[in-house]
Length: 192
Image (cartoon, rainbow, N blue to C red; front, side, top):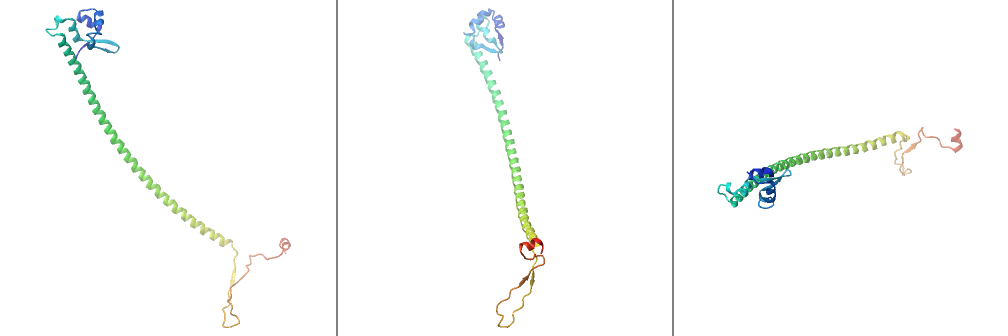
């Protein structure tokens, strides 16, 4: 990995003024420059562009190749970190999908159980309502039987072989004691 210096540190290392460095930053130093935290930084390898005598036999293109190799290595490392991060995120997604599937199954089972319980309750409610209607009808019949006037029946004589009495006889009912006597309006009003 390369070391990056500020413009003033780079100028000192290269043995030139800051103005000379600034002039060349848009030219041959451009591939070696980067901005970090609002500050312009220059790769230390670019110092050799200013001092061809001190580069121990390396030429300008060899320095550029080394710089490009360093940049490629940095990008490869960054790509590798991103791949690892992607793999970690994929693992998290798989875990979350498994959790969601498990939760969905749990909720579906709970819903099925609740539906069955509600169905049973509805069946019981229907049965209770039918029983209530039956009891209500029986209660109504009992009340009608208690409030109706009692009639006594007189046994009918059995037909004899007498040809004169050929018509069938019907039971005759006697009026009960509870029935009021019929009379005119004024008789009932005055109690006579």
